[in-house]
Length: 265
Image 1: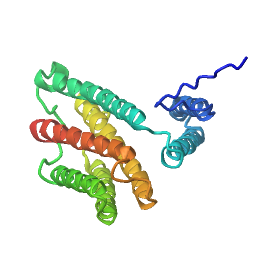
Image 2: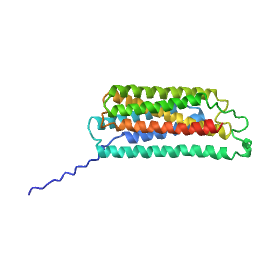
Image 3: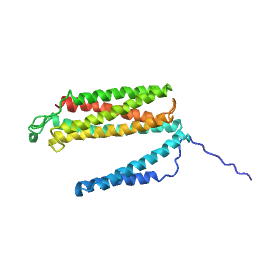
Image 4: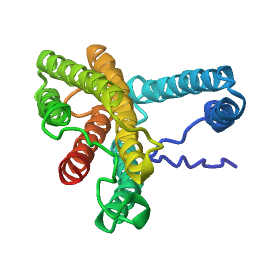
């Protein structure tokens, strides 16, 4: 008696077994341990090793995902839709993350306590000039938003040379922003330990700078993939995720500039 075997074909990608999620989670778990060893015992090497291990494992894991998408064709329209939803939810979580810093800033500035002199900025704090480096950084990020939008439209139109040029401009602008931010930190007359102003200022702007660094890395990977012809008119979800993330970074900086640098000073 012949038995009929029914094959259930699904449009979703059923991933294979991989050791990278487990190894990467262990490497990420070692990051706070390395940080505690550095703060408590001034041991810097465990933290450096944890950072390097996390970066290497993440690169290997993402390399496998790129292979599944580009060469094996596992990222169907259903998978792409799921990836877009995932990126959107991730950016939403980042919005909530920065919302906590803005809440702390406005909670402290709208009703300054007696301990800081009942004024904002607190007594003894000299805020940075609003219309110097912060304004230049704002112009740089707004220009980078224009250039990455240019790259997006160039990819959709199949103009890969223009897409490479505009994406390279975006990466260079991001690096220039980080350089200016580092120089600004060196010129500040206060530190993170100087009252609630210093804490909220460096936490909000510092984490934004970290997100810019992550965004530059993300865009650099997209630049390499674009150079390697991994993207086409209909399949560039990796670049789309990087573009959404970069626009989010731009919007957060606009709120930071208006509230912390302009209104707060």
